Every structure is written in structure tokens, then in C-alpha cells.
Length: 226
Ligand code: DC
Image 1 (spheres, rainbow, N blue to C red):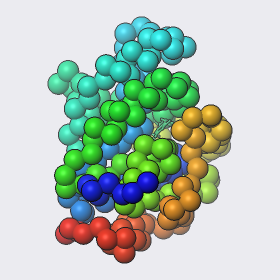
Image 2 (cartoon, rainbow, N blue to C red):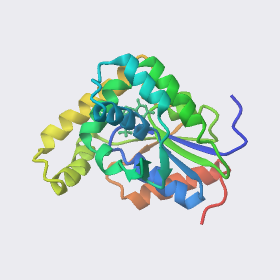
Image 3 (tube, rainbow, N blue to C red):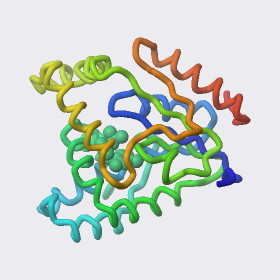
Image 4 (cartoon, rainbow, N blue to C red):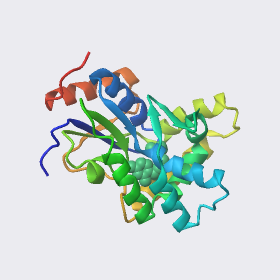
């Protein structure tokens, strides 16, 4: 597929690989719009539970995903005037999102919501199937990953701050389970696109990873960085 006239930087990667942070910083650096695709899956689960809909109720979930009208404001996701990101960014909602994400019609509804985010001067989109399905016309494709223990250690800092009582082993197990689910489902499974630049974020600082990504984007012709 030829590349979109509006430059898109598509990023896929495993949970806690740092793709969210890097995607947001890249969007700031190039002055592009930002899409956190996982947030749409998380939001679908949140809306269902907030309305007493069981996550096994497929038809209701598809309707919820079709009706989603999130308002993105930077990292914030505003629903009825309230930023719900602090609630849906938890590991619990990550797991809920992963559980409902294999539903074909739900993915289709969210596909259109994601494509609608393409806008000038460009878009940085992060998720699991950004490079391989939703934005195959991206100018730049990146795949971020790190060893599961390194990712669990990063997550532990968050969990300790929130005093959840989770141990490193518990977090590692959760991540492994989520990776497995995300990598083995039939639709939109996580894998590196053939033309993606694969970046190992383990044992690197955020600034080091960002520098590597910026250099790669610029080498692919992305301009406008500050
Ligand atoms: O990126 P994240 O951790 O916020 O994603 C949460 C879950 O949402 C992820 O485990 C699977 C699902 N997801 C997906 O199926 N496809 C995407 N492109 C992004 C997320």
C-alpha cells in the first residue's frame, strides 16, 4: 500500500514496553496528533462496566464501541466532562481491554474510529495492530519490546505508588498472560510488521529510546521536529 499523504508514525509493541510514553513524546516533538488505540479498548470495557454490562455480552460491547465518542485532550480522555484516563490506565482495565479485544465487530467499529484520527500535520498512533492492520499506509513503522522482567520492574514502580500490593512475580505473570492473549488471537494480533524498525527498550532510558526513534523517523523523511 502507498503511504498516506498525511504522515503517520505507527507504533506497535508489548504491554509496558514504553510505547505509550515514546509515542506521546514523538507526537510532541513533531507537533503531530496522538492516538492511544489501547485507550479505545479500555474505554469500551469501562463504558460497559459503568452501565452494568457484562464483558461477555458481545452484542452490547459492539454497540458500545460503535457509539464511543471520546474527546482526546493530550493524554486525557474526556467523557461527560471528566478525564477517565486515571481510571482506565490501570492494569485491571488493560486486562479487561485485552479480554474483549478479540471480538471482530468491536475491532471493526474501532478501526473506523482510529482512521478518523488521521489529520494534518500528522499522526502518531500506538497500539497492537497499528502497523499491521489499521495504518498499513504509515510512513514510519516501529515495534517496541523489552524483556518481560524489565517491563514488570517498570510496572512495579507504578503499582508501588498506587499501593496495590502486587509483587514483581505477580506483575510478570499478568504481563505474560496479556502478551500471550494479544499475540495469539485471530484478529489484530501483535507481531512486528515486515517493514517495522524493531527497538529493544530494555536497559535504555526514555531519552535514549526517543533519540533512536526520532533519528529513524527523520531518516524516513519525517520533518518538523523541534
Ligand atoms: O496498549 P494498552 O496496554 O493500553 O492496550 C490494552 C489492551 O487493548 C491490549 O492488551 C489489547 C487491546 N488492544 C488491541 O487489541 N489492539 C490495539 N491496537 C491496542 C490495544
